[in-house]
Image (cartoon, rainbow, N blue to C red; front, top):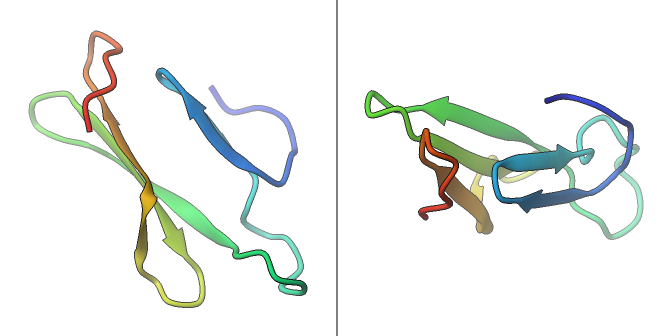
Length: 72
């Protein structure tokens, strides 16, 4: 599901809200984007990438099984 316009990041179960890309690069907040990848086993893996360092943020990494179970 893609919807809304909010400058935040959060996830609950298998729902993700991402609004950190496209905002002005001012202030002390980081900005970036999500990489969402589906593995061969059907698990969807999500990583937030910092736009300045191009590194994944370990605090915003998770995976969801096809059954909707949060795994990583």
